[in-house]
Length: 586
Image (tube, rainbow, N blue to C red; front, side, top):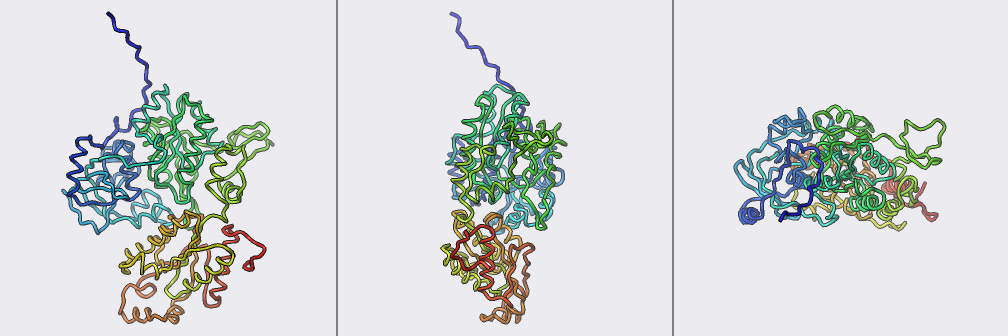
């Protein structure tokens, strides 16, 4: 009897991954059990959040054809030519830094563990090589300015990179939005089931508003295909809206306002570099591995904003131009995200360059959204964002006077930082704002006990203070940090930890000779006599802040005067709410 077979459905063929196939570093279940037993006898290193994100995407093929943290040849080729030595386009180096405390050698096997010390993988080290920070920063980011978040972070990395084949036991555990976390293979299956060959991907690290919704729908319609909403939920820019809030908004939009027959929402656990044009090209290659052959790119894609002189790190359309230059090779068509404005009379969005003459338009910049609406406690207008998204953002982002902030007092030893912090603490308490004080000397007796005064130990001390401060601010607390913090790179890394919008750098500008006169501990005298080495201002430099939010001097101004200046600054920026009973505004 003939068998009744169902006809085979035609499954559309998506664009092939880079290199023709997806890399997988995951071992089988049997190999995993053997590897766990073997790994227990190996030395281990703990991966940073960035390296853990990189390892996860290496493991599942998102970085195909790359199959490991880069060795020396691939690293230098990526820096200089934006390619692997095989010739494959790859504009961002994927490397694994280690510090001097790890006594590693080639031919050795090591465990790779996450931040909670869970075993993730085993690496067989084949290469160990040093790298040049300034050269890598200049090639990848186009700058050595430590106001660039990646450049500042690079100053905290180990001085050597290691490479070798990696066996991954399992992908890192995630316990939020598990249903939206997919490997490239899984995303490709979801897309194929939608029945379209063409796929346009949309990358975002921000909430989606009506303009984004309109653009993505138009893009999918234009290519006659599917939309992959692919937000980054790994490491983004400090101060960005947290991914929990963003993803709740994405889910509402997809469930209520997008066509389920042509839309896939999936999360990407990537660590962004904020490297502008190079990063945009990298993003397009990654999205090809997930099945997209079109990629939406807007103004200032992957840009960290402005440098120390207030100039943008990248041109607004540099990313679009680089992607268009390599379209034939990537196989990914650039879809420009042009500025959209709202026509209230017609109740629709339109490209800004196509607005009819004399037509009324409405638009809101990101700055206005933050300052005039979210920080002021005002509801975002319906024409700008869906009411559901507005409610999610309002709940997650209280008005600015209820948010956290960090006052960072930097200056020479004896400049008057601690005295100003003590007065400011009292003044803040008087108006009802409780504050935590992290004093450099006090922190060294507890959190940083045992650290010396080498540059590395000083940076470690400052970054520990910065980490604690960032956690206080993240939970809407106020913190005053008083620490010499002599090096710009470490200060800028702390700024990035806390978030640019909530970090106030105060330079306590007291001349060295005055600090020496005030020195009741006799530390400057000991440094002058050579009894102690590496003392800031004597035989170790203090790098003056280039762009402090406030500069105060302590020769002609008292601690009370300077604390009042800082308090007035907090009122002027909305961190404190003006009350009629306040006696501090002058």
